[in-house]
Image 1 (tube, rainbow, N blue to C red):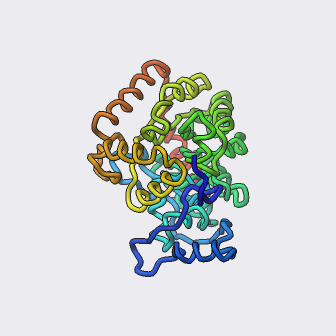
Image 2: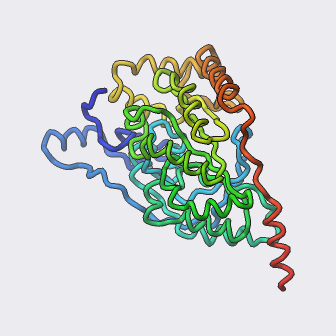
Length: 357
């Protein structure tokens, strides 16, 4: 791996143009180069937390190939810095770049627990599993300070409402008390992301995430405490982690995971430019090979938006990956499955509360 001009601790190596603005927030590369030559500090590489005040917190998911009906995100942007993250593009709607801004300007929705409680109190609301987070990680580093995820879990428990969690951070174990209480009534399912068994690969793909050792330990601890775990081997990137599908599946099954899911990497919008810049700096010896193989999975382009194709890809390389996943399920997950979460208790809770008035 080349370390030339690499910003340590970050995935993206620069900001890219925000397609929604003629004037964007990005620092020009020529200005950064000037500062470097002159010995000046142009960028302190610090994370900023910015408060925002949305009117709602739960979003209806309309994409037909995403396995959730509702999602909520207490944070926008993510300090984990995963280079491939599809959520990077969403930062442009807030006026920021999908590159370094996505990792360093984190938007905080402090009213999230109150907004969630207001929704769950509505007579018109019918219980559906709400997933934290459909966009950015609800247990990213900001959660240590703001504890919005924990506060929202307390709301879900109070209202006996089913909740799903998507995370790749072992910080989730801090809330094992709430997770166990939810699991007692079949109200919780955890989806944790593991993309490699190699710490070297994890470090450059996902620079500020929990280590592989801690992530594997998280699967084990959650499973041992009766909390159902699905492991997302996602995304699979040809010639980076595609050779690890079977070893990863075997390991997480042995640790108690009930199922696996996967996607093949797709680099939509600004992510294609960000990923290309990153891989040419961190893996120059295999950059062209990886990029061409990703293109082979998506009809000759890095960008893939077609429903039914965007998650699984097409072509020989994609077929090989998808076949390997099927083999992994047959070999390591036979007879296992994630439970369907309980939606009845919330309706009973609401009925009981209404009788008090």
